[in-house]
Amino acid sequence: MNDLIKNIEDGNLVIVPTDTVYGISCDATNKEAIEKVFIAKQREQKPLIVMVSNIDMLKKYVRNINDLEQQLIDKYWPNTLTILFEKSDNLLDEITCGSKFVGIRMPNNKLLLDLMNTINKPIISTSANISGNAVITNTSLIEPELNKYISYVYDDGEKTNVASTLVKVENNKIKILREGILSNKIKEDFKDFID
Image 1 (cartoon, helix red, strand yellow):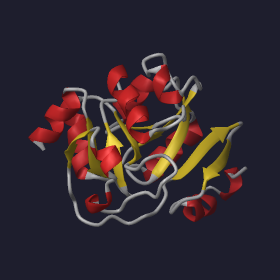
Image 2 (image 1 turned 60 degrees about the vertical axis):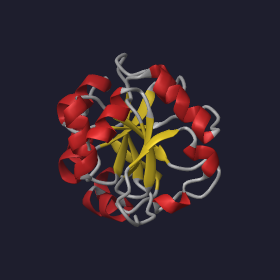
Image 3 (image 1 turned 45 degrees about the vertical axis):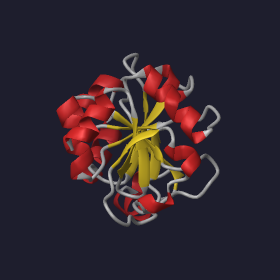
């Protein structure tokens, strides 16, 4: 854990387990680290997901949390649910590639929650693969071309390859933008609010 913390604080890229697959992470407040993510993934400008460890951290980086968003948070976080919020000025524009919205998730992963609570900052989460290639479920599959940009790998065995559910709340309705493991549950629990 100490090596992981040091590398994040030093502005390096690390590979860590998430709730779903292995992901590249870095300090979400470090502009140079964010730029390294795009280089490492050979990725066009496409927004990155941000992870937070608590509601106070979330509030710092989003403009507001409406009632329906709060209900989703209360019911499902920490979990594989990513919510698209309007970002606050505290969040780097590089993360959202100029969009005023940002996808944020609170992971159900003790390692990541402890890491963020220790450094008291959000982290980036993006799949640990070169853009367009398959996501990886164990560290033996890390591509050499990607690995040269990575300073530290936290191996936690085999992960399950399931997508996080991505939702956006608009006009008091929930839009499911990406189907994932929680989609059906959300449709059932919030049937009157599904767009």
